[in-house]
Amino acid sequence: MKRSIVLLALLALLATSLFAAGQKDGGEIVIGANIYSFADNFMNGVMKPELERYAASKGARIEIVDSEGQQAKLNDQVDVFITRKVSVLAINLVDPASASAIIAKAKAAGIPLILFNKEPTERGVMASYDKVWYVGTNSAESGIIQGQMMVADWRANPSWDKNGDGVVQYVMLKGEPGHPDAEARTLESVKAFTDAGIKVEQLALEADPNWSTQHGNDKMAAWLTSAFASRIELVICNNDGMAFGAINALKAAKVKLPIYSVDALDQALTHIADGELNGTVLNDGVNQSRATLDLAINAAMGKANVVEGTQWTITTDGTKAVRVPYLPVTPKNYQEFRK
Image (cartoon, rainbow, N blue to C red; front, side):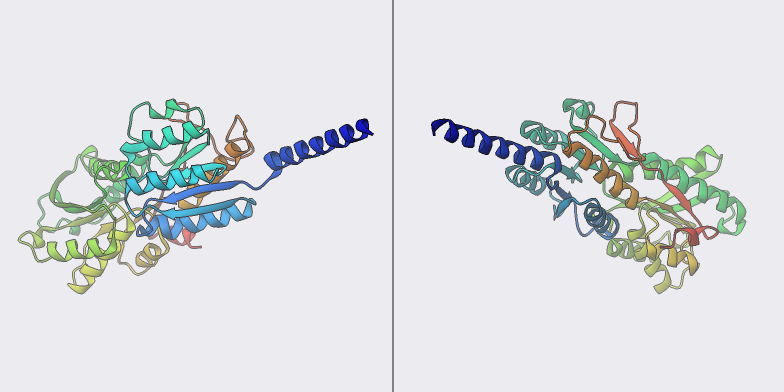
């Protein structure tokens, strides 16, 4: 009798162990994720819906919260995710200089971490945890491509040099100060002119932490009534959202100027079709979202190679990154990017 009871207890224990193993190996993967601000056209309009769609297609559950542009709020949200024992974290930093705090939290909890879209600026911080990776772009690439488009079009349109001085007089809507993309685009887009032997003159530059359409409208409207308004020959925008505002202001003032941006949102393609935007650069949020989740799911499953079975590759430069390429979008090829 006692042997039977012991045997039954052992069988029950074995069944419990097998059930637990099944839950670990085949149970639902729960991803704790955030967007740094739902007010961002690109992050909320492109990446968030694709993260949700792609997670569902992979049989994973994802919860995405709005950090409202506050790093302190993001820190608290990560604490909540850790308390709830999510399988993996997918984090869009608010402040790229604060990556170490998020990485330290994930490391202490033993939870894999995928940082995406905003790359840490702290040197060596990615090496502090063996289960952290980054998914994004090469920030400089978008500025380089945008600059190359502008140089080619400037040379092809001598009438753009309104005063005939051989110098590009431009205004720029920069985006978030300190954001790796904003800083790189600001530098590289203009550097393309100087590298091509074309002189430039910056008439105005304005930053906006929210990359917003309203900001683009307000600043462009102010520039069009400024003392240098008649000298503006080119409008450079570091994202489509700000460009939309600038286009609205230009239309309201009945002024036509060449204008370029980055992201290739659907609305930007419409503006290109209507002759209101001269070019943009595809910031491939769809593939950034897919890469983020492919890595997150593999990491949650405990795979040593987080790109196993995917199309992605990890860089060999120590950044532990998957980099999704940018692509030029012009009046000649914009229809290829229509959904």
